[in-house]
Image 1 (tube, one colour):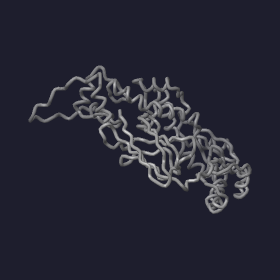
Image 2 (tube, rainbow, N blue to C red):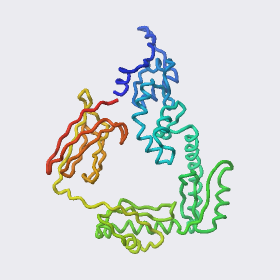
Image 3 (cartoon, one colour):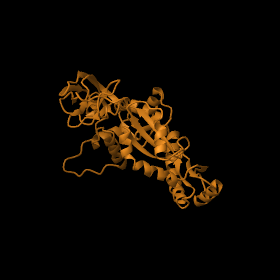
Image 4 (cartoon, one colour):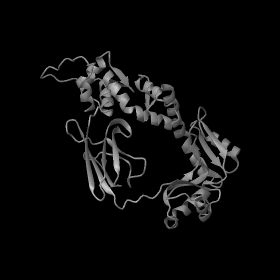
Length: 364
């Protein structure tokens, strides 16, 4: 549908191609045509052979991560992906102001890291190199460390440099020389650093936590997860509580006999009374009256109004929240997760009943 709307209003239309003569066999498409077809299909654009061949021959066509597109298609792709690209680049601590990201999305030299994050060629090479380094060094470090369990404390990847960091509780220089001898000479990047606790000690704490579910329930604690965080040489628990409790972390650490080995990350989320809650169903259709599966609905509020996730995807033509407080609500519609704004609708959820809303959006 995206491509159909683009084609209808496109200012740059590829020239017509010569039609095949009836009765004669059609030659197989050239490799560059096959690649372009696959690329355009991957980003949801028109990809029949005749259109793609004409597009490749059009001097006004441009490229999006190696995929040929019309200028109008590129403009729509940029607007659709701008918000998401800003968030993703920020998560990697790359320059993420709107002007920089927009320029990247428009540049023919931009590469899409992991198929979604726009990067300059230099950034792409750096991050790709990190992955290659991790794939090479990680298994060697882990195998060596497991052969020295009395001092092995695990390993992690430094987010800033991509260096694989191995941790040992003793003989750090000896382990560094031994690992270096196992790796091929060249541009491999690793380091060996001192740690306080072995991986075996941290796993013992982890086992005690795994067996403590009844104790957590008695203390009215919701545990989102726990695990060993090698970069901190600690076990970390993510806990949710209904009210602040300054002494909670100390009590948890004492209960599991984990002084110095455990950190508790506490999030306070007040208990919400959903006893008179209702359900909310938002039907999302396009301008042709068809269901729009795959777009996102975001239940907007300054407070917690649903027992589930605020962001849900349209399935069978509707976004559904089964438990919602009976309050006024605003639902925004997005082409992708919080990117590509399409519209919004407001309403009020009725207590103990299902509230049905309907919105029509224009898909690009």
